[in-house]
Length: 136
Image (cartoon, rainbow, N blue to C red; front, side, top):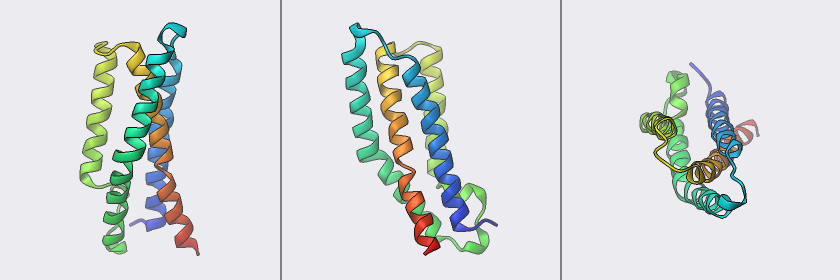
């Protein structure tokens, strides 16, 4: 079994590692001046969409699920809900497929991945807040 504190830390670590990875992919492809506006718009749009609407709900669902479970039965995979694990796997598979098959222009990839990566990194805050609250 694992403590809630460790599960919050594991969840934060997974969101952070995923965010840094995605952000790295986005930043490595930043275009020259001719595509700068398009990439910037995709970055801002994806940041606002994921950080504003999607990830706060997912994080809240994960935290609620964790607090409702008995601490006696907590395992490492309980840091996320089953649907969160599925969404993560689908997003990774979709991202890899889109890049490998070049189904989207570089302007989209760089901007979207930059915004998505930053959103993932920002999503660790609620988990860190829970760790701090547990230590009080």
